Each structure stands twice: as structure tokens, then as C-alpha cells.
Length: 191
Ligand SMILES: [Zn+2]
Image 1: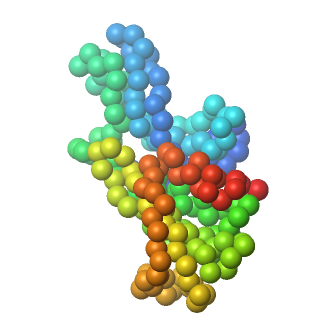
Image 2: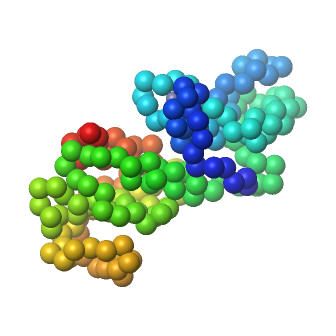
Image 3: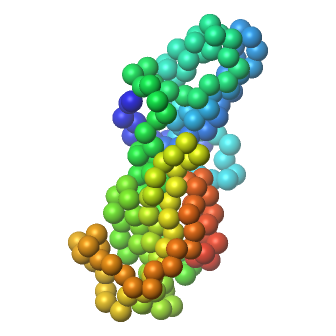
């Protein structure tokens, strides 16, 4: 497991955020694919470029050798010192960091618990709050819980871990890939 910086450059030259995608690879047996490869991408739907961290480039060469040896067409990316699937914590951190810089139509970000949660407050009703909270990773994906709650008291980041809101409603459990769209829908889009 290598530590990759959560931020670098996208292939287009904009700031790139650590995420994962399937990349094609030329093998002796033809075109293959490696899934879940760490890359940097700016997050724009219009941008089809990305960059590969240099550690990942050299690992891909090794994985290509393994695929050729075993005759595999596809493989999930893994590091040489890794047995199981990758730890997703840096992906979660990267997503939360990116979202916390967004300005939405209907809410403001009031604070972030790094790697865990973002708390939003409604612009219309100051007692209305939303929380996006990392839940877990399982073999189907990485999951967040999206909650709505009310508080007459102002919230602070110091008190929040102990805070138990009343009238909590879970709006949904969302896969990591769908979080940004779900927030855009709920919050009237990014401005
Ligand atoms: Zn880009």
C-alpha cells in the first residue's frame, strides 16, 4: 500500500483529485484492462484526460507482466505488498476535500470532519442541516450515508462528534461514485 498525494495535476493541466478508473493496456495476448487504477482527474465531465502517479506507472508494468504470464485480459489493480483489495481511505478523504470546496445553491458547508463527514446548513432555514457521512467499504463498493436533521442550536466542529440531533432522516445510502450527483440534485447544483 503506497501513500499517494490526494491532489496532483489532471492531464488537462487543472488540479487533479485522486480517484480510480479502468485503464486499457496492451498485452502480448491483445488489449487488456486494469480496473481500479489510482489516477488524478480534475472531476470535469468534459475532460477525458487524467494522469497516472509515477508509482502507479511502474506497478502497471509489473501487473502487465503478471497478466501476460497468466493469460489474463483484466485484473484489479493492487500493490506488490498488498494481498486484498485496496484501502479506500485516501479516496474518501479526497472526495470530502473536494466537496468541501464546492459552493451550492441551497446550502453552505459549515464544517468537515476530515475523512468522515461534511455538514451543510440550509441557506433558507438556519435550523436545517445535512450530513454526508462515510459509512463503510464492502465488496460492492464504498458507501456514504446522507442525513438531514434539525438543530435550533448552532453547531460547532468540536462538539459535533458528541452531538445527537433530533429528527434525523436518512435521505439515502449512496455509492462513492454517485455522491456528487446526489448532492447536486439535493442542493440545487454547484454555483
Ligand atoms: Zn482534466
